[in-house]
Structures are given as C-alpha cells and as structure tokens.
Image (tube, rainbow, N blue to C red):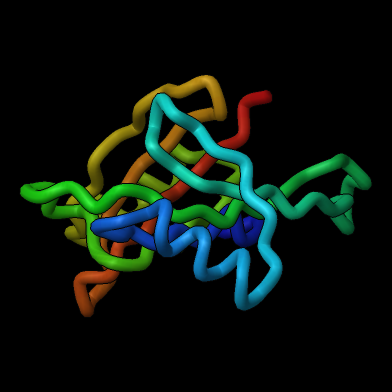
Amino acid sequence: MVANLGGVFIYSKDPKTLAEWYKEHLGIQYDYSKEHDTYYISFYYKEKDTGNKAYTAWGIMKRKAGNPLQGIVAVNYRVFDLQKVIDHLRSKGIEVDGPKNFPEGKFAWCNDLDGNKIELWEDTN
C-alpha cells in the first residue's frame, strides 16, 4: 500500500540552528518557509513504474508543545489512495487523524507501535 518514501522530518526546538548544523556538516542547502517556520529540501527522482517526476522531502520543523502526534522524527509515506490506507488502518484499530487537504496534497497521521509519528501523503498535484 505504500508507494514510496515521501519524506523525513525532524522536529526541533531551534530549527534554524539545527538546519545550520546540517548545512555546515553535511552540506544540505535548504529553502525556508516562513509561513511554516520550516527548513526543507526536495530530492527529485523519476518514478520507476510511471516515469513521473516525484520527490522525497527532508525538513526541519519547529517542535510544538501539546501536539500528541508530533514526536522528534516523523516518516512520511507516499501512498496512491489515502482513503483506502486510512480505512485499512482504522479497521485494524489504529487511530488516524485526517484526511486533511493542503496545497501539497492530502495528508493523514497516526503513530506506530512505539509512538513514532507516521505521516501518510497522497500527492494530488
């Protein structure tokens, strides 16, 4: 049901300083979204089966207190049919937040057995 890795996100109390560390030590050149206070980069590739242009996102975001779905690291999985995946997870007793629509696509969130955040993304662009 998972089509690809959509992205990896690190939540930090100080995203700017952490982004500067990754830039200095690993050479990651970020874009910055003031609206979301997020440092991010997109790694583009062509999908093996379709040849369509796709990307994996990597970002550092502001950690916000009180968000039960937000851990320290989150993995985003790209899916073809978000509602089908949500229905499947709920049928297994897993609590899912979403779906929610954003300019980048449709999203939903849940946690794995150890409490790690999972973000599901259906690219609607």
